[in-house]
Length: 178
Ligand SMILES: [Mg+2]
Image 1 (cartoon, rainbow, N blue to C red):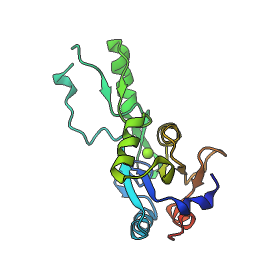
Image 2 (cartoon, rainbow, N blue to C red):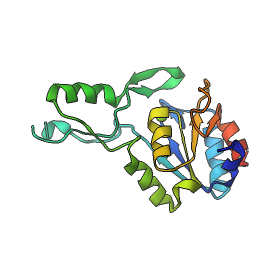
Image 3 (tube, helix red, strand yellow):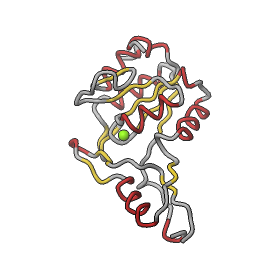
């Protein structure tokens, strides 16, 4: 997809950790770009694999229960380009010990993307997924037919997504709202 066609899209789905914010800090230009997209009438949704915000207490379930996880991401990006061990690093340890295969309900599996599109009331082809993770955000969105935008301030390999942006300001320019 050529970059200028972002201007024709009606909706944008954003990843949160490592994209809209890193740790507790908004990434530069995120607030301004999201505000401009909203004011332009674009539909916005947010999808996250963040497992820290949920209150599921798996201990009460431990024996015979399926191992359900929001994601198998190895790393959780935080401020300054650093990271914490992701949900996947813990889930894999449990899965290996229990001899079960985890059921992934978050990205890159299709249900979360389809829920976001349903909530927006838009077709996959009219809605871009914006995220910082190629395996989770980009490949997952491609699998359901969404155009993809990789947020990569540090650069990315060619062809990593339909569009690669180094900043939110660049995204706003490509959409025509900045
Ligand atoms: Mg992310």
